[in-house]
Amino acid sequence: MQDDFLETLRNSFFFIYISVLLSWCLVSGSLQFSNTVELEIKAYRLQQFDFISISRGSRAWKVMYDAVSLKSNALRRCLIVDWKDLLAVDLNSVLGHAVGGALIILPYNIDDLSSANRLALEKLDRDLYSLNTNMAVYLTYGNAEIIALLDEVNVFSQKVSSATQQLFNSIAASTFQFLSSSSVTNNAIIPNAANIVGRLWASDRNSPTVVVVAHYDSHSAVPSLSQGADSNGSGVAALLELLAILSQFYASTVTRPKYNIVFLLSAGGKFNYQGSRQWIEDNIEKQPDHSIEMVICLDTIGNDNGLTVHVSKMPSDSSSIGKIYTYLKMFTSSSRTLSIISKKINLNADVLSWEHERFSIRRLPALTISRLKSHTDPIRTSLLDSSKQLNFQALEANINCIAEALLAYLLVLPDPNCTNSNNGSLYSVLNKDNRNGRVQQWIKLFGAEPRPLAGNNDHIIASLKDTVARLSSGHVTVEPVSLLDVSLYGVLEDQLVAHRVKPAIFELILALFISVYLFGIYFVALNIQLYIEKTLVKLKKS
Image 1 (cartoon, rainbow, N blue to C red):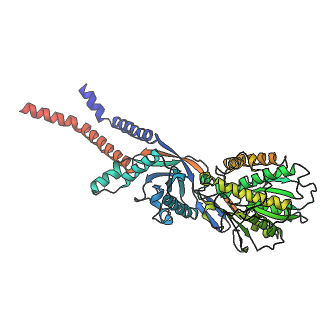
Image 2 (cartoon, rainbow, N blue to C red; image 1 turned 90 degrees about the horizontal axis):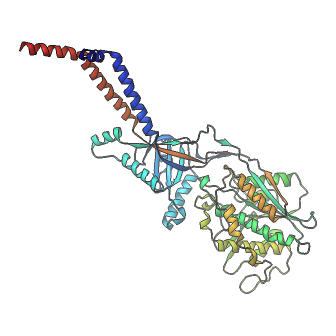
Image 3 (cartoon, rainbow, N blue to C red; image 1 turned 180 degrees about the horizontal axis):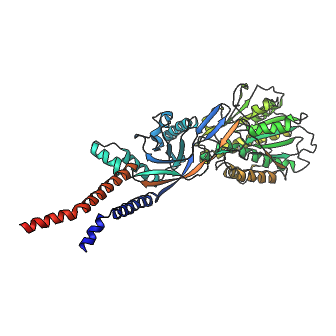
């Protein structure tokens, strides 16, 4: 039996079988370990769009890299970093061509940040908005599990004082590998963009027309996180509230004003006001006999204690813009402010400043009402613009002022200069007691969730259509919008899966040790019988 065992050991096929078996166990064991899901992370990708000569955002979306910290070698790795650690570095250099990807951890609740941290995050938000990189960049909200993962990656990436310990860590220590879930091969998309148009008709449909406009899309450096509650959820809420108020006057022939009113909820406002451009092409250029008397655009009015009227040139008192401005002053209380800013249209600029400029270019009397003094205010494209940051008291006061001024204009109320000693209106044509929190409801429906143009907004469009139809007695149309000079890309969010893995060099070294071990056994098996025979001969001689 001993001879049979020795003969088996001398058989090379036996060692081939053992080698294959051990290799299979090693590989399958490694795969079983690394395929164990450690953590699933819902991550939101940085914006990606091309607009004329402007390219912004993250040009990649697939991730399959080992996780590393900010201070370690990120060559072909996925950087995982807390947002605060990016404040003191240059994003363009950190997210350079050598980095495979990045996962930035945001505060779990942005609305609860201190003033100092909020200012710091606003700066990072602006830097991310202007970033253009070929890497896949994702952001996620930090929770206990993600913070623990970050801490473990930081520990793994730390350089120890001992070279031996550093070598051991690079070979045997465990780390994480990030894998994206999306299987998309081409993320270029054509969004389903549409304008929602409601109408209130005068008794004579040939009467002059007033157009009220508000774009409903939101955008920021991270489109899937951009609620856009103030910009421009507040404008949408104001337009719907104006429609609800005015529809009561148009319901009766006795109180019906002698103006047609168009309520335009435009798409693509964050990309050079694509919806307004489309509406002008369809309704103004093709119908030159239009009778539009004034266009009022509503943009970002959900905060502060005052309003600013933006125009392309200063209006005369007798013009429609001058009259509505007079009424706005008339209904602005002494505790609030009202100003007017004239800014010439820069026809050489790639992007228009305000939505009214789309109409002013076509020589239509137009203005934008906003709480902002400048179109460059970062809140217009900020991921910090959430519904919790709105001042509903200020929003409702702004809506009341606009509604009363518009009604006074439509009803041609007399003596527009009569004001009381407190600089408030002597009268009000609004019934403010029957609104039942409508403004808060509009914000909840249309200003508390992301509405990126590159996302799926079918439910938003359907909900806006139903709302406008209900308020305008069914006089609503949904008009498709074709994008001009804009290329948008999808994969706005993805599920990143973090696997715990050993470094690749670990398996190579382990395979080397197993090979040496098997070679040693094979060498012993080939020579053990000769060694035993020599030993027995020596024992007999002794």
